[in-house]
Image 1 (cartoon, helix red, strand yellow):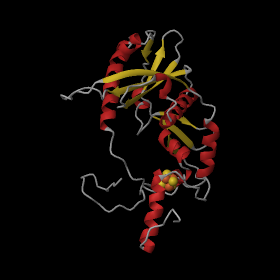
Image 2: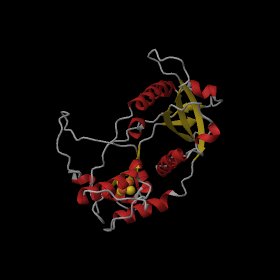
Image 3: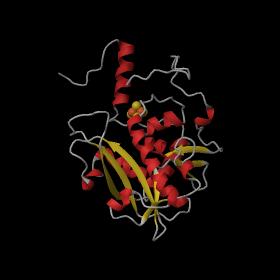
Image 4: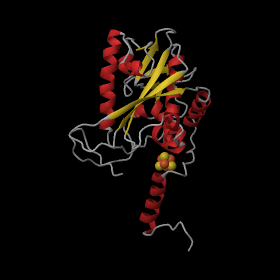
Length: 279
Ligand code: SF4
């Protein structure tokens, strides 16, 4: 997509392709602390080259438009759950799902943990200089066992609704599971007892309605997921090893952006396009 650079007054300015804030760029083998968010770890898992160019070489990654409708469901859900959190009572969805022994977890740091940009769940990784962070949507608590339950809100608009059993087997939702695993890892390392079952609270906008009239209607479904943190450390270790090397790793061969960039470079330098087919 086309992403034009603007300053804080929304005026167009030249795009340079690199960040200027030195603290957001990692130098191989640096000794000072450096934060890696859940999103950047996910980038590493998706494409090691892009992660390296971003974190170590300081490339400025083109942005995507804000997900304001999704953010609105998150915001309104947060208000609902915070109201129950304050009173320490079950949310209406807990009654509907036979989970009336749960309450939203109350903790003085909850707002910090939900602030993905500035804080989030946070640990120092082993004895390294890497700090891992991850901004969660919510945490609930089992009032019987006192264990914490990780929750992630998801908004979508799929015709035909949500099939709970199928939801997480969609290849596009693999990242959701990894996201939950990462949060469970952080929360456990922070010293909390975490229930093995986490939940995706999926809000699916109804597309089968006859009119709009300024209203969206959603189905709200709880999709349970048993998290698994066994794969995380070996990948974080490998990520740190990569950050400390000087060699640029291979790209993801399925990435359309890199294919576009290849075609772009070739076209600009030769004024022709590369043919992918031999006719
Ligand atoms: S393959 Fe895609 S994600 Fe990886 S470096 Fe190229 S553009 Fe970035």
